[in-house]
Image (tube, rainbow, N blue to C red; front, side, top):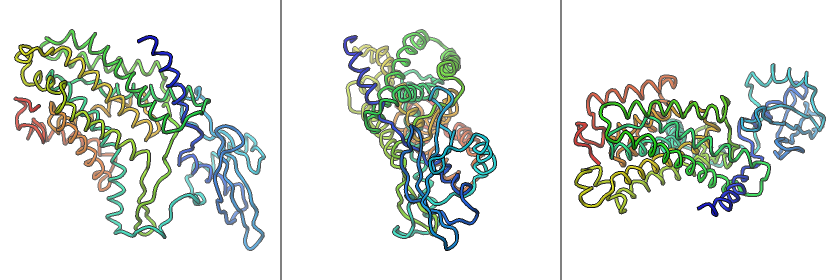
Length: 446
């Protein structure tokens, strides 16, 4: 095994360098927003194109400025982005140069303080989609479609985590309350790996994403193996709430472990493939699709479906079902229940690592404490679907994502999480086995 570590590490180092000088939509908008204050009032500004600036992490915008009926001038602005925490945080605007002339510190301070923080509308992005060549749909349909597309990544994330809960609960009848922290662990593993290798830039962003998943899965699975061997195995015959208390303590320990490893700052992953693709429009409202969000949604849902097929069609799946139904009888037929449980914990933690990567790539980052609420919502999804049933838990994840999308589209978004937890209380009262399980908690539907 050890001779393989060096080539694997080299491959990881090369591939993780795939994320290059991409700028997200907020950064390009901020740079466009800085253009009007650098020109006379009332000037007509038209962005011509965007390119990479003269130095690393610099974004250059070439634009045309015309005052009244006068002669148009071609100008440029360079926006420099950087971090103050060893390159692991999200880059912020730290400097501006107009027509190649750097702005003084005092002028840059006043520009940021009085012009960039007011969120005024910047000049339009020339690469932004227009409604003229798109199919027209009713306004309600367009709004609902955009909310559904925006909720797809959440469906993949909740589906992965809920399936992880169900995979372990189906064997042990116990809830592991630290899977959210394993998602944060996978997120940190991918971000740190990419951040350490950004300077190489010898691979493609797609390869970098693939290896980021690989690193997160390996790190999460390794920690899951340690949890199963040194914590869960000693509590196999425990009665009462020892397992629940132990995993709560492990959740706190993992959160603190992540805080010490990454610090309190949010670690940020450079964006890739996030240019929106226009689909349809309703007036000026354009429905767009995020390519990387769609790709990661397919990966997440594909992994969840793969787990369902693993349980249904493989030898390990037959052993899992046998132990879940009757551990004693399964042991009489030669099934090693301890090995089945150990593998289930490793697979569950690997799924959590994948969910952490999806969160990081789509939303930019995941803090050390971000796993708690994520894991709690996924637990709600698992219970709604019928905890102990992997397909039911996966469908519960889809339901929670759809519920959040509908709530966000129609009701105050600040009350959304409260509604999710109230939904859990209602289900536990009226149907404890979940939507896809039995009306009672026992026997478990596996």
